[in-house]
Amino acid sequence: MPTVREAAVCLLRELGMTTIFGNPGSTELPLFRDFPDDFRYVLGLQESVVVGMADGDAQGTRNAALINLHSAAGVGHAMGNIFTAYRNRTPLVITAGQQARSILPYEPFLFASEATKLPEPYVKWAIEPARGEDVPAAIARAYNVAMQAPCGPTFVSIPVDDWDRTTEAVRRHTVSHSLHPDPSLVDVLDSGVVVRR
Amino acid sequence: MWSAADLKLPVTVVIVNNGGYAALAEFSSHFTIKRLVGTKLPGIDFVGLASALGCTGVRIERPQDLAPALSRALQSSVPIVVDVLVST
Image 1 (cartoon, each protein chain N blue to C red):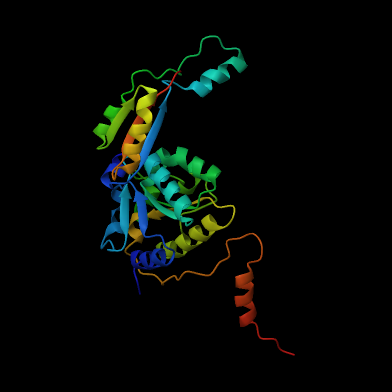
Image 2 (image 1 turned 90 degrees about the horizontal axis):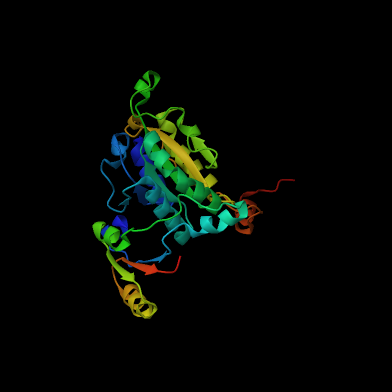
């Protein structure tokens, strides 16, 4: 059974998101344990710059860019350029750290209260998964929603103790990102259909 | 700028430096505002800012200096900030 971090790294590799744009804080550190050699971290000195760089990367590569921000204060700094990315229809998967689940009821310092509401309405979809085990699947959905036309940013809030939990591997699903039927996927579907009389 | 310098990106940043929020200043006439506050930006040393963040900056004050400076910047393998003064 992989850890959430191992499952996320494998998934991100399949999704072509091996560059992380970010500005870290304490609640993000466990993501960076055993940081893979084929990944790179691009540091911005302020979060609006982080989102701006990721926006340019996503537009240049035509693939969603991955962002990692710190809890509420980091997302707050980033908001101006999250708004811009939403208007630009830039596909971004924005992740942000959250305090440990076990201490969330006590409103710890530096946590994000109602984390998913902070970037709304300028993200297409936002979630703090119900269980740590669900984080990789949440990232997969965040990617597909971000890439679905019209593209835009999505948001995943990740409690700090989620990364070391064990979970199931999540593979990249084949999902059409266009608004009309995708001929190539119709062919795939057709090849899998057995007509019975 | 620091990120670009750190990554040694071949990026040319051109600042069309009119010393203020000219778009707002133009808008103010639609609202019949005679004296507009908060739109003048004198004295920002963009070359100094670039330098502080690890980038080379060049300030262009005469039109004839623009083309050669841009040519040099576009051939550079590291980020260059070209601060181009224009009329306000």
